[in-house]
Length: 178
Image (cartoon, rainbow, N blue to C red; front, side):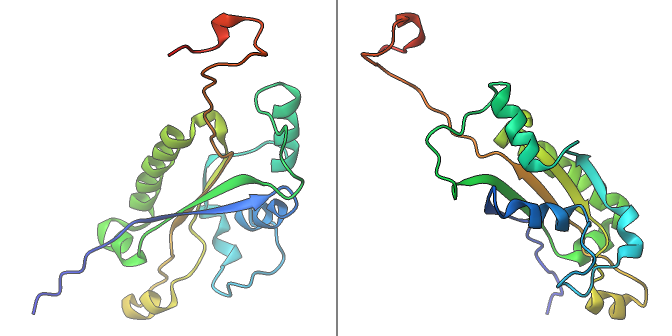
């Protein structure tokens, strides 16, 4: 029987509110003192790769973007989902067989650029590849530390709205006609 194993890359989206994003922001930036995932090895956190960093908190960045007229939260309820977290993942053995850490950095840089295309580069607030979570099973199999590489991308959800016609529009050039 053939030992061929198909490797699947998975991208999932988790939505967050303004109230709960700080918990995930701290996790992604490794600012917590403890982690529910006991395999996080904080001595390896320096290997995490930021493809994009936010210079403030994510909530402060959203407030700044609203103040600058870049985005609008008009009409949203307080508990609205304001952030999308895209998590890109593939099995650890795939990276080990193809070059390990260096290969993972290149792979997830491409995934980050894919997210930029899909979400819009201006809508991505933070992107970090975690390289500090030990894969215990593969560590035992290979007899050396093997880490589970994955990418977290925090973005603002994209809503494209086209106004076909409005009685209230004073400048008719702003309204598409069909």
